[in-house]
Amino acid sequence: LFDAMLLPHDSDEGKAARDRVELEYPDKKQTMPENIQAYLTRDYHQVIPGRKAAFQAGFIVLKPNQTVFDEYLEVIREGNYVEGFSRENGWGGKGYGGVVGSMAMQGLPAYYYDEIAPNTSVELNGCRYNHMGANIFYEDVPNFIRKYTDLHGKCRRNVEGCEDCRKTDMSLIKNIHFTNCRKPWNCAGCKETGEQCSGKNNIIDPRTADYEHCMYVARTWHEMRSDLERQIVALTGNDQVLIEGQKGSYKKDVFMGHCDADGQIGYVPIAASTENMALTVTHVWKETK
Image (cartoon, rainbow, N blue to C red; front, side):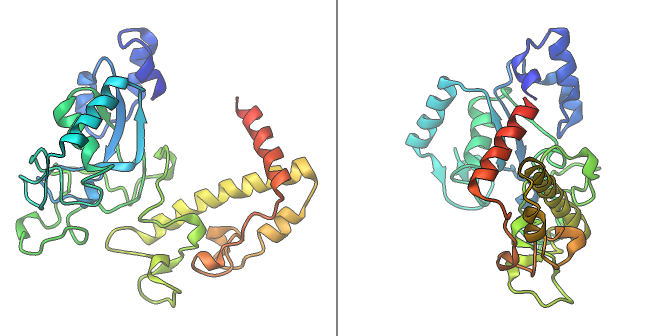
């Protein structure tokens, strides 16, 4: 992403970098802006098909630009935000409203890059970048209106052939935003039915996510924590980091010993001192440079 943003668009290196960027709409590859100012993904799982989608605030890559910053401030100072949920509401009265974050970090960037500074941003594939594992089909919550029967089951992007992010292969995912699949340290291993859970925040909601996929997503994070723990032991010789840090018994095939019960109360913290953590972070940073 950085190479495509920073290298000359017409250089061999710049062209090669742009070819590797996975877009939400691949047919727009040839119309990527020469000077890319931002990469974003859209929060399609909130939108009614045919309406404008806000950006997803969990991920944004920006090229520092004072002019863009000043223009953002002008939009905010003007305050032209129309309350409501119709196509004529939101920022500029142009439909950038009616969803979570409309007035702030989700609706404002969508309005800015669509209306104020068009053709300066690139929309990335939301199943691959900023992956949430969310249901992108208009089948249930959020913002589901039962009387819109002609829209039921449609892709919220309002196109045919949507990628189902609940089934995206883990090998294709670049980075994960833990929302629908819950935070890894919440030890959310419950289905909505059939299990006794300590709270609704520990349940994978089948209306918006797929349980099995979310377990793969959670395991990916816990595998990374396990790798960090092994590196701490290798550097310090303190095997208690593994013994104490992986003593949990709750769904060990998913949480790898880091959870002793469902819910955040069941999370088992890393069993390492502040000094050992700092030593390991310094080592890992040097190794990756």
